[in-house]
Length: 246
Image 1 (cartoon, rainbow, N blue to C red):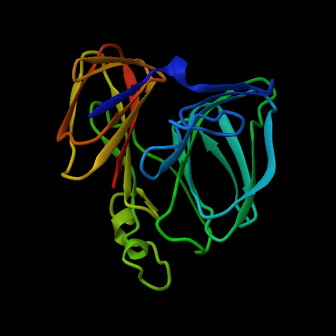
Image 2 (cartoon, rainbow, N blue to C red; image 1 turned 60 degrees about the horizontal axis):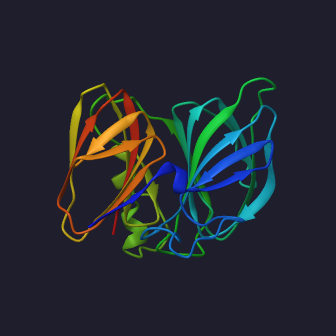
């Protein structure tokens, strides 16, 4: 079963300093049919104006992934982290039992374009933690960026990140989810095998991709269940995010 969400069907917000597109219900946008997909709860595309800022605010028991496409994001949090996340970099903040943070565009002239993604964890009340890195661009391949922290999924005391993340360089997340990115040349073909019982959410972040004869533009998404394979062809140079969910 494949469900299509076109870019223009997303929720929208314009706060002046922030323009946002919401794939799922968020803030003042509420759609009872769009409350998330499996454990994927939030997929927001944010455009932050020069010097724009999310002031310090709190979260708990949520896995928050940030993917910067253009510009630089300045991050500070109650764990003592102060960092700049540049275009091409990703950040994972596990809010756990509670964390506060602020996110800002430090440039007085350049806009900031990013995706903010929330995934509901399989365990709550754990210590907050932070990961950040730039992943290499693998043209016409899948780049794994998030993988399950098996110690948390198995309920191992101590909440220690396991080699499931470190061996690949991917961030260990507190949920049975993998997240991959891809950058495709024009006319490149790429497939993805979906294990039995898994569900996939594909979001096009740039360009135009044909998936199983369905044409997707930037901002379009597919939610896929009960299917064993996806076949992608890039109509133009393109980028996409893929979530493999329990």
